[in-house]
Image 1 (cartoon, one colour):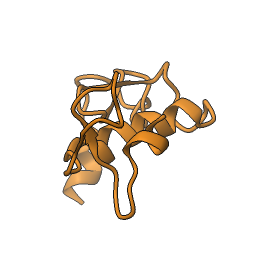
Image 2 (cartoon, one colour):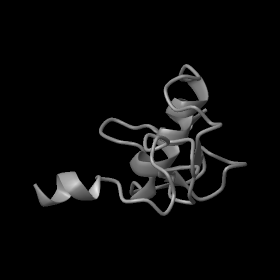
Image 3 (cartoon, helix red, strand yellow):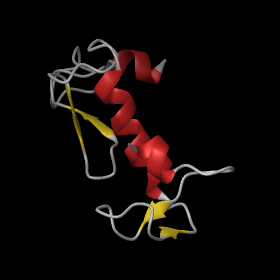
Length: 90
């Protein structure tokens, strides 16, 4: 339980040994905790339409990347300009 074992009065901290969480907490919060751990925790309990997993994958730093042809630019054709050439010059 992250809240029970890693939260103190002001922030979350790490653990030296997850099998003995009360023994010696680390007096610092890792930089990836908010950016990655909480993002994955949120997505575990979020509605499935928040980020459809058939259209996105995650890199190792928990950034969503759209699967070609499935993300927010699915209407674009690969190899074609995003803006029609005539509209770009106008």
